[in-house]
Image 1 (cartoon, rainbow, N blue to C red):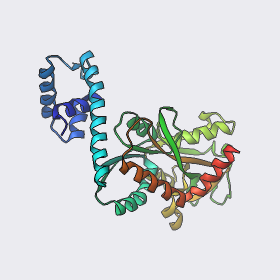
Image 2: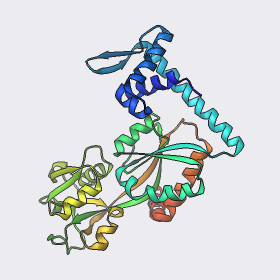
Image 3: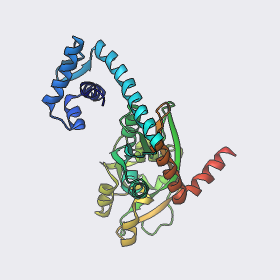
Image 4: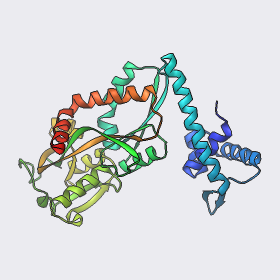
Length: 312
């Protein structure tokens, strides 16, 4: 229903890339360029500067982008408000999740939710925690689920479950028989770590600092972009790592990896992240309610105990 030229312009302005906008809109790049030029002709002014393969908004473009953002927000509110009156839960929700959550928590959660609301189209975007928070800030997704603390006070952050992180080693490693490990004992071992921006990495480095150690004390020999790649490297004897225990079910059952708790324990909260001012339609309310119930049934009691202890 919204003007196609404005939709295309808004996507290019948000991503500052004609190529990325074309991918997001499932259009060819020439078609994206044509739609933007049509809008520029309508306003009789340039909306973008294109210098040295870099796209920036002109002053007119910034003004148009601000209004376009308001227009699409109001359009979504209108569409969802009308659907609520008819009891219609069709439409779509876009959820973003950091890698660990997307691979090991969300599939089961979303499968159950989809079974209850089959007409609702769910879209999932995967990135590290920094990327997911950025998507929420830029309205690229409706709801984010992350594994690291969120500092933006303009976002609503709701803890949903507690996750334990453990040391992971190969079965023939000299740590394999240990019941617990202290952080300083890991410093001389080749350590396989997640990439910069990963929530898991941020939580580990914060834990290292809390144990009175310098971040550089860890002997990082490799940085990898997913729990699966890290598990493969540890299995191959290339080093040790710290991973979510929730990611290790198959490997622990098969005996291909050994998990050892840290002393003191290393735990973190998985949290829902959303915009404070964003219109909450019924589909979002239903998803949040379902997800909170799911998390309560899968580790929520430990979260409640932590929150009670923090407020005592």
